[in-house]
Length: 85
Image (cartoon, rainbow, N blue to C red; front, side):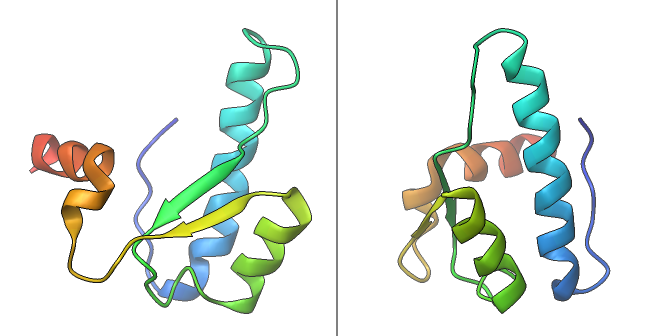
């Protein structure tokens, strides 16, 4: 897997589809029937688009939204961001 940067927010759904396919393929070798159950986001516009919401609904993925301006609720990704910076 690699880190991909969005040129515009409307690309999020397409990148998420690619990410979902890669993660499920990687883990299906180790764990039979692995599926993403939930995704947690900050509620930004790129995640609230109709296309992104349709992808989550079709895949049966729960969308968990953190409260605005509370990065401590998203500890794993915030820690990753600190490491990358």
